[in-house]
Amino acid sequence: EEMNKLERKKYDKNVAASSSQVANIIKNIDKRTKKADIILVLKIKTIVFD
Image 1: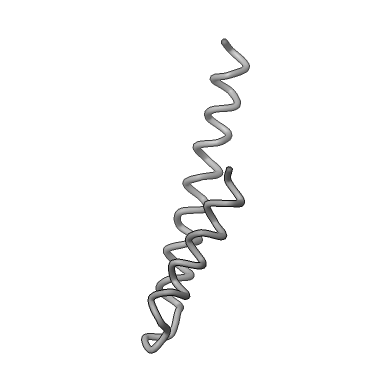
Image 2 (image 1 turned 45 degrees about the vertical axis):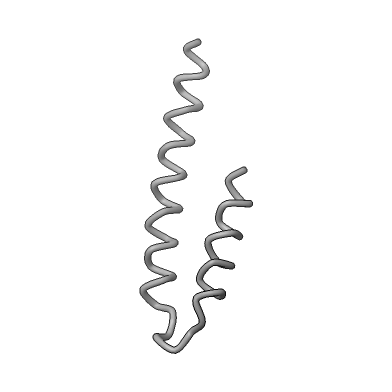
């Protein structure tokens, strides 16, 4: 139980960091970039955290 809490905290921290990374990536993506590319970036991030 205690270990799960600790793992959970670590996971939440990682996800939070990842979310801000994704936000930065999307912000930095050129305006002309296709939506599909943004979706691809999000999918890659999702795979990393599965």
